[in-house]
Image (cartoon, rainbow, N blue to C red; front, side, top):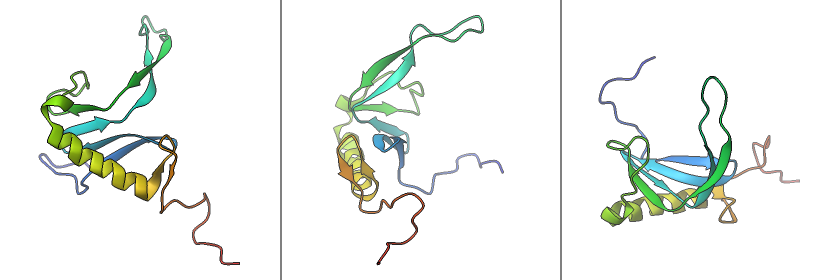
Length: 120
């Protein structure tokens, strides 16, 4: 099934996790990263051969994905209101699902394979 032109997401936000570590939130055209490490090709591959990977770090950076899909220009300083709104969404997500980097267990996280609490 294909999407409709101009369709809007029914969700206020989309959260990016790597394992149990919260890495970013997207809401509309905005994406806010939290401090985390990531791998990046350095140098990139060529001629059908893969490149080597280096570990890099990104801080609290805000990107306008409508105008910068490659996430190259941090606009956090120009949009503190957006940063504040997205940080509040991140906090709600941490309360709900947790964040291993912040050493937070979410209130709605259950052990894998367990559907209901064991009352025995």
